[in-house]
Amino acid sequence: MEAHRFGTVSSASLMVNTLGFLEAVSLAKSTPSLGVGLHFNLTYGTPATNPLLVPSLVGTGGSFHGNHAEWTYRDIAHYGQFPAIRSVLTLGR
Image (cartoon, rainbow, N blue to C red; front, top):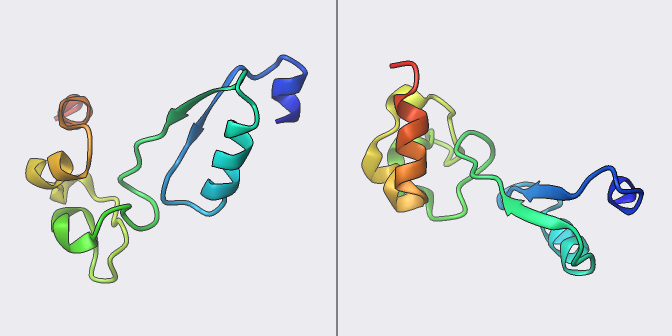
């Protein structure tokens, strides 16, 4: 927030399923001049949805396993922005 106040940072991203998310939302709401985007996360922590609904994205403990080779388009579509993610997944294949 200090960097934003000094004009160095004009926008930031939030990751829903991480520690500090609620505090970050509160800070963002109190700072309307800060542009805020959503960082779409499929590799860290636990899903914002029920892990049973996205089985190819998670390991046995219910956290993201980060192995994109095991992801299915069905699970990604259920979890979020299918067209944007499909373009990322097809890079380098």
